[in-house]
Length: 124
Image (cartoon, rainbow, N blue to C red; front, side, top):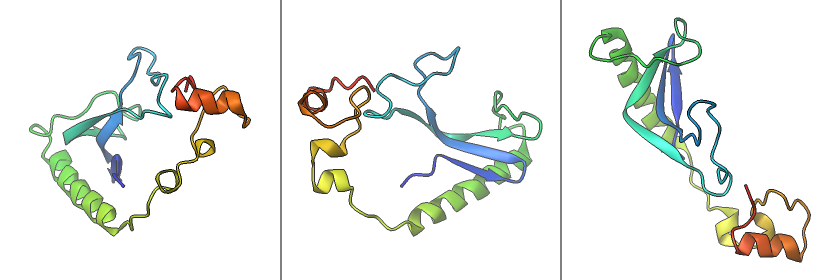
C-alpha cells in the first residue's frame, strides 16, 4: 500500500496526485476505475492548509524551513505506515472471475457485461 498524502499540523504533503483529464475542471480520466493514473512527487508537494485550504499553491521548501522540516517528518511517518501494512493478495488476482471486475454501464451480470470486461469496453 502506498500512502498518497500525509497531514502534520498545518502542513499537508502529497506524494501522489490524480492525473486530471481536464486540469481546468479537475475531472478524472474516463478509465479511472479500471486504469488508475497518478503523478508521483518526490519531493512531495507541501501545502499550508491553514493559509491555503484549497491546496492551490504548493510551498517552495527551499524558502519555508518549517514546511521542509514537516515534510521530512511526514516522509518518515509515511514510510513507517507503509511498512506496518500487512500485504494480502488481491482477491481479483487470486481468482480472476469476470464478475470481480468493475464495469461501469453494466451493473448486472450477464453475457453483455462479461464481453464488455473482456474487451475493455466498460466505459469506466
